Image 1: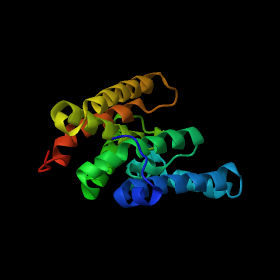
Image 2 (image 1 turned 90 degrees about the vertical axis):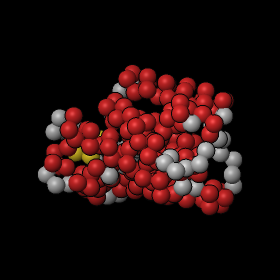
Image 3 (image 1 turned 60 degrees about the vertical axis):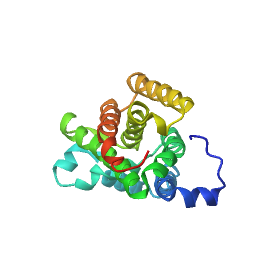
Image 4 (image 1 turned 180 degrees about the horizontal axis):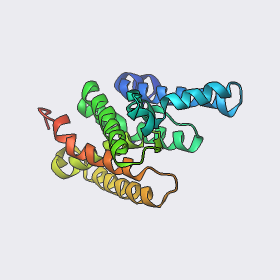
Length: 203
């Protein structure tokens, strides 16, 4: 379920939404590396970050797109590496189960809900970026399947999911510079909304 050994072209064909998400994430990260880290266009990198990063103050002043754009924004290597790898591992199976439309709704929806929670529960000066809220949303959906739709996931994969979710939640509290609230809200939104995503889906 979580082992990816498909040829590249087959992966693109089977999981088009996952492929697009990964491509956008990597393209934006590479743009920041070229313009910011390499110093070719630092002013552009600064303005792009100001435009795309989630700033509660900016959102309250009308920058509504910042409820969406932070989901695709990563500006350091460890961040993009962890999130891109997690998307590669966990997104394809859910895309196959849900279909393209429901999957993209689940991914963006849980990420946006996490960003909305940050808007109302964090101070006005709070800033955030990254796909972690959406990723934890996917983990919440997996937990729903493990609890309520066990026949859709093998026993071995159920164990893997529980271990990964437990480690991810614990690491959210002990790692530095982590948006704990975003992780928790993303996870809970995935868990709560999962029945809607699987409505009328056969077992």
